Every structure is written in structure tokens, then in C-alpha cells.
Length: 125
Image (cartoon, rainbow, N blue to C red; front, side, top):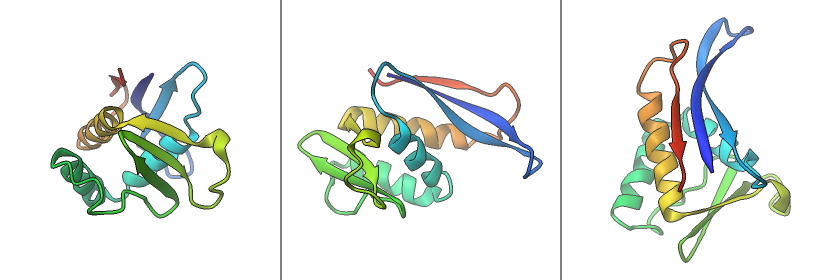
């Protein structure tokens, strides 16, 4: 799976924002997209997640956000809606490596201003 971090102009806000585009086969991406968008509003929490992943302290904090749950089983991270936990169609499951990669790259991307043409392609393999 590949994810493209990009920017887009939002008319109602009259400004350019960071955004995400997915290139995927059949894997649902709605939960991952929404989870990352929510993390963009709380970078300190995103950095704490990364710190816990790097120190392999997977159960010291809850990786869930306000609206998106993260369940960890073995090496798998399942992201799902806390509003509808039975909606399996829009859940996303990533390995620890994939989850860490996407969090790390999203934080790095958000550190730069959302200028037009600013993009980064992230391979999850």
C-alpha cells in the first residue's frame, strides 16, 4: 500500500491544509485516513505514540484517538471507528512496522507548511 501526503485548498476556510491520498488495491482506508487527520490536531499525542512504539511499550498508553480506536494484537494494529465498532468494512489493520512508518511520516510531513505542490509518497511495504 502507498500513501501520498499532499495539500489541498479548502474554500470555506480560505486556506491550504495537509491531506492524504491512498493508492491501494482492496484494503479499506477510511479508518486510517480519519485517524491520521485526527492526529494532525494533536501532534503531541502523535509524538507520544511514536515514542511508545520506538521503546516497544505498546500497552503503556491507549493509542486510540477521540473517535478512532486502535487495538493491538500480536504485531497487528487494528484501527476502527469508536462510534461503530462493528463496522468491519471500514477498519484497517496494519503491522507494527506499517503503523510506525505512517505515524512517523505523517508527523514529519506536518512539520512543513502546506504549500502548493508539497507532497510525499510513503510506501508501507
